[in-house]
Length: 258
Image (cartoon, rainbow, N blue to C red; front, side):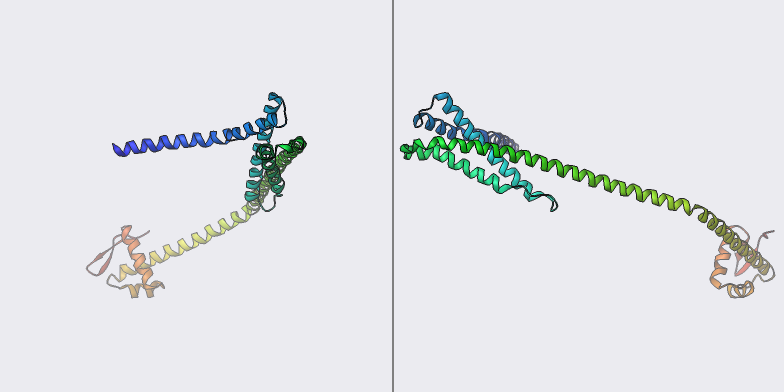
């Protein structure tokens, strides 16, 4: 019971941790956005609505640059050697620019309020960063599409080669069909000849046993011109088919093959 309660608590804890991990990155910029908005209103004397818009722009740019930099870094780490590298360094510069802007509009203006006259020059830089991020993401999208298309082309090429190999194998098999047919005929003829030769030896062995029921394997082997092991095999076959039987060291012929 206690262990089940612990397991349930662990599951609840894991669920809450997953929810927090998903929500926290989106709410984390709120304090910084508040500071940026307060700075533009207090130090730059901007209207509340414009200050709010500036705060949203700065933090949105921060999220976009950071996510883009991480995406490009992960791509560079996992890409194939033949794939083009992504300009992660440029995305990293944009992330650094975001931090500089955020610090300049919050901490720097609180410490050096007289520098407020230079602060508006920051926002054209933000516009440039925003355009650069859009260009980076569009370029990366084209890069991924090109890689996907290349993989598809290679896959189709491999499938085509496999089809050609199968067709070639089928063609070769069809070319050798007639040869195989002739080989089958030759093999059947050879097998029939061997079988006829064996039947002749079995007939000769039965006739030999009729006249020499006490003969041993060695004598029988010399008589029909085979080795002793073949005589043992022939005896087993003849006995299994009911032609002979062993009777106190004698070979008794029960019937002939005629």
